[in-house]
Length: 88
Image (cartoon, rainbow, N blue to C red; front, side, top):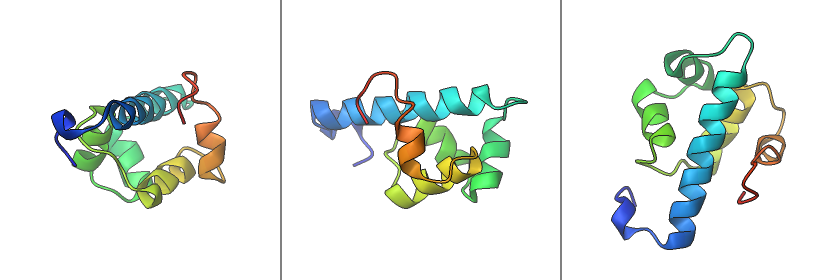
């Protein structure tokens, strides 16, 4: 489901929380990472990361795990604990 209008309210909330979390954590890196740098470290395309951060797609658990590892977290759950909205 790549079209936000087809998402339930709960799915849209999760997609938004993931987008905000990934973007925030990318920018908090020291030094801050560009989308291109994080995508390369995670082994995904820049376009895919851009779509995740801009709420155009919901990433798979595997992609989220790769992003979490690229951000320096051993487990995806460690990244999810940083969700300030408490959605994830």
